[in-house]
Image (cartoon, rainbow, N blue to C red; front, top):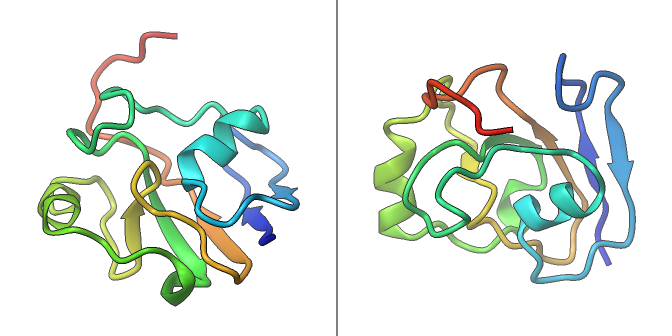
Length: 112
């Protein structure tokens, strides 16, 4: 069961956090939400927006492969990098991952 290291984010996780023993196959988004990190997910995890965009700093190759739909959406994400993923689509493999949650999203208004 892999761990997720979340690097500090000024609003969502100011001090960073290590999420331990996450089930293999779980999405990064679900793991974050289950551990009190309220990452945006405006499309309710249906791969229709980019509000749950994360940058995978370590462990990228252990994640499920990105679909063409996810890759097309990522082109619209704020702060896109080569190791960007939509956290609702990226499912954990056997290795630990380290993620960075971008400071901004393209979402103009947050519901909560």
